Length: 233
Image 1: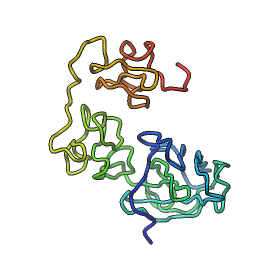
Image 2: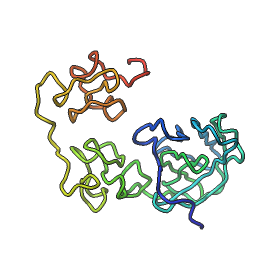
Image 3: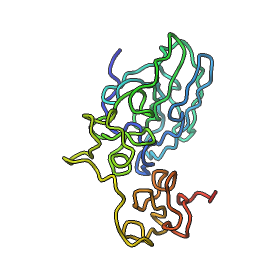
Image 4: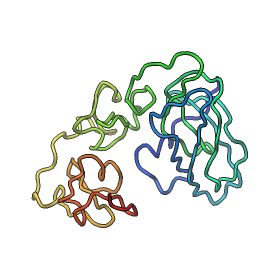
């Protein structure tokens, strides 16, 4: 198999929804399992102002050396934002990803088709791989990343880069203890409309890492753990 690309913006949607990315792939979801004959529906948002067409491909393998597996949809209008494909004879793996225009990538997901599906291993939501140097920490939620939310409390060193919960560029582990501060604030700051959610680590932010499990409503903006532009639950 020939190498497909080197690691760059791989799996952006799994960590932070970068609005500057030309393509944000929303599905397939992390950890989803497709069987032979199932329909895979890949969806994405295109922010490209130059691309007139794009290819949607299936890739697999270590994030530092992805391999081409299958062409899913060729010469698509980027603005269509969806490609449907029926799973055929493919090796059973847990580290498949959909690539759109070689610029946007889905989370890892599994295909159970030809041969037995390997048992789960590695950082749970990283396709059976351990975390790479650029996203070194395997969080309690099973994602790789490079912040206190990933490298702090609950980080799994066994599947983190070099067996350590250490942020890139640092020599010691991230603090696993929330910041001490005025109990009415979030780590000494007041969460605002831009960064509304106070995470369990006492940091303000605007993604699922901050607004999801462990978010503290009493320290969050307007007393709610709600991602901006999303309705409250």
